[in-house]
Amino acid sequence: MMWMQKPQHQQGFTLTELMIALVLGSFLVAGVVGVYVSNIHTGQVQQRLMSSQQASQIGFQLLSRDAMHAGFSGCANMIPQRVVNVLNPPLAWWAIWTAGIRGYEQGAVPQFAGAGIVPLAGADGVQLMYGRGTSASIVTHNVVGNPPMVINQNVAGIVANDIVLACDSKMAVIFQVTAIAGNNISHAVGAGSPGNASLNFGFGANGANFSQSLSSDAGTVMPLESVGWFVGTNSDGNSLYRVALVAGQMRTEEILPGVENLQIQYLSRGAANYVNANAVADWEQVVALRATLTLSNDTKMPVAAGLRTFTQVINLRNR
Image 1: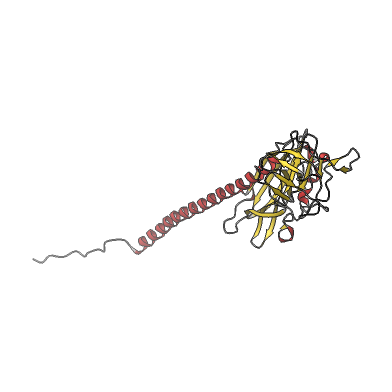
Image 2 (image 1 turned 135 degrees about the vertical axis):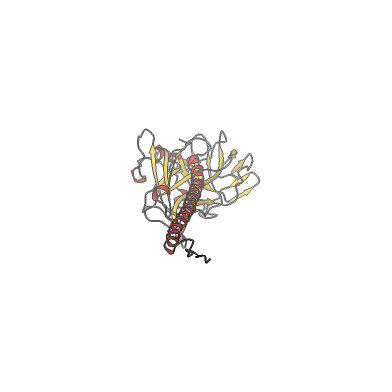
C-alpha cells in the first residue's frame, strides 16, 4: 500500500509581519531614545541653572558686603558737608564722598577701570565708600607736628600711599599717608600720587577749610575703601567687575563672567518705591538698593531670560 504524504506548509513570520514588527520596534526604540535624550538635556539645563544661581550668589555676596558697609567712618554717619578732602584736585570718582554711595544710570557710568575696560551700554553702576577694617585710635594729632599723627596700634595695616579716612566726633578727613613708622603717620603736602594739596583739615561755617587737628577724643583712622561695581566689555564678552582702591592705586577684579545686564534701583528713607539713580535727590537718604543681574544666554543651551535673571535687595546699615 502506498501512503500519500501531505504537502508541508511554510512555518514562521511572513515578510509583511516582519516589516510591521520592525516598524513597531523602531517606534519603541525611538521613544526610549527620545526620553533618554530629553532627560539628558533637562539635566544639563538644570545643571546650568544651578551654576547660574551659584554664580549670581557669589556676585551678590561681594556686592552686599560693600553695600552694607557703605558710609561707615568709624565715628558716626558722616554727611558730605562734614567730610574734608585734602587730596590734590581734580578729584577722581573714588575720592568724592557722597554719603558712602552713589549710583550711575546706564550711559553715565564712569570709566571705573580706566580705558582698558569699557562699561557696557545699557547697564548701571554703583560707587560705594567706607572705612575698611579695624580702626586705630588717634593718640595725638598736630597737622604741623613731627610726627603729625600718632595712633595706638596699626591694626588695620596702614601703609605709605594709602588713602585713609580719619574722623572725630565733629568731622572726617580724607588724606593720603606719605610715610608711616611704627605708630607714627605722616601726611605731608605734595608727596605721593595724587598727594595732599594742603593741611587744611578743618572746615568753617562759610565752607572754607582751615588748618585744624583732629581730636584724640574718640578720634580714629582707617584705610578708605572706595569701590566701583559695573558690567564691562572684554574680548570674551561681558563680565561683572569690582574696582577697588588699594594703596592709592585702582585694582580691577573680574567677579563674574558671562553677564548680560545689571540694573540697580534705590530706596530712600520714607519712600515707598525704588527709583533709578537719576531720580535720587539725596544720596544721604538712601537706605537700600535693589540689584537685578541678568546672565548671558548660551546659544548651545538657551534658557529663558526669566530663569537667567536674579534680584537681591541690600539694606545699608550705616544710616
